[in-house]
Image (cartoon, rainbow, N blue to C red; front, side):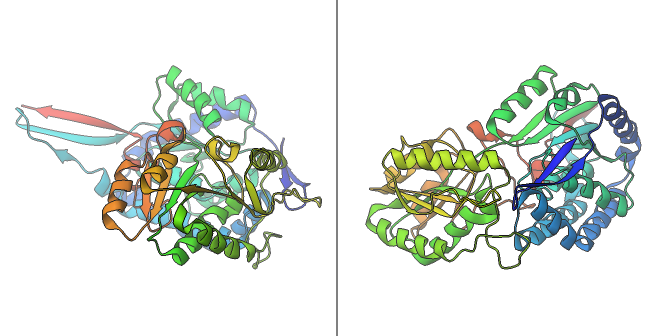
Length: 453
């Protein structure tokens, strides 16, 4: 059984039966057999179905947002936009897949030479709990529009969301062999990765789990895309618009209760404006309402699981014990549920726990940098490399930072975010490969060269 615990109350709310190994194998076989027909459909035909999926997502937006609130604690006011973003992704690839995968003619010694992009077969997507709808569709929309069939193994803590995604496809008139949901416990995933009918793997999750998935996929010589953890730096220089920067940094850090891989996790502030900027952050953080995610006025819901909340508290207490200042929060609540208060830590140095480890919760870590060069050095002093950002009014320094920050994406005077139109992914322990944009849809196709004389 997959047991669902409501993180708001800490109480069990549902059980979902798991598939047996035989049942999972049969459903993989269904997707494998459906591939030939799905592959041969035109982009227009596939796009028509993906647009119907988008419409079905929008029709169910409120109920899907409530389901996310119940299963993993996402506030309703964030859940509905997440569903809309998933629908947007479906619409985007329905419109642009044909353009992104069009035949490309290249000059050579042939009469005609070109590259075509053909689907690989049946793919496996292993998905996390923190954005159950968006991260599913970030995988599904481009993979399906490329002509692959998809198997989805969602996180065991959000089985209701996984089942609802399958219902969305059914409601849109898509065969249940095109997008197959596998409700499995995590240990069963190894057999699915090794199944010879699975052509490639997409994984979003922790760096530790990504290492295991990459090892299994590599052993089977299957391509994989990994979007893993992050400890994203955000540099704030003295010449920045401090009010605007404080607004965006606060949003980036606390969205989804801070449980986002691309959140701004290490705020590196030029020393001359450090105290002033910290005051702005503290003012904004103090306004946020922590509470029941089903209430429309809640800004921050609970941490998704008790073990995650406990680990977050360990990181905070170790960092404070090492000499950091805790200006807000830092105390684990005694009441039911897995809540953690908005926490602001300053005086954090490179050796401290909250600088070195990824913090997954509403904990803002602020460091001081004496100069632009030191800020860049602090930003790049991490094993991760997902996103990074810088706030400055100096266009030249902004470009230098964009070039030198070691990350898969950099935002200048804005928030690091995922956008269907732009590629997203990391380097180092944050993974490899790209999702979204024209680059993302080309991860799971055969880039085939044709030479004709």
